[in-house]
Length: 128
Image 1 (cartoon, rainbow, N blue to C red):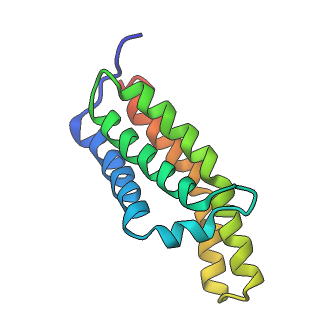
Image 2 (cartoon, one colour; image 1 turned 180 degrees about the vertical axis):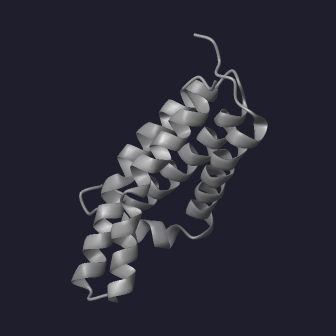
Image 3 (tube, rainbow, N blue to C red; image 1 turned 60 degrees about the vertical axis):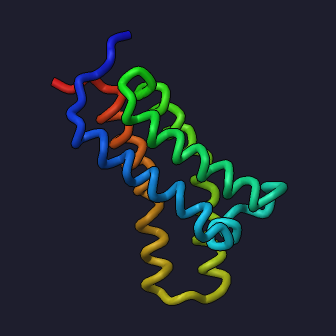
């Protein structure tokens, strides 16, 4: 399969986003630990693994030879972390957080498929 034609700027934006998110998993792991669903055996391991996968995926997006594989990996990661976003929303509702915070968490849920589409669009789908 030939590599999609992608401008450096186009692919750098999601790469930077995932790189920053991945680094945050190591800078502030407690925040991420708290949103890991309780059925995950070790929240800290899940936090660090998702951070590593985001960083590796971000770097992979920047390398033409690994771009498509990295994109599929990031899409899979976005699917895998969706339960954490749902758990965060449920925690906020149970804790009686402000309506605006809860609205923000509801608004965040559709961002997962949007991020999946963005990664697919810049790294997998052939651009005209």
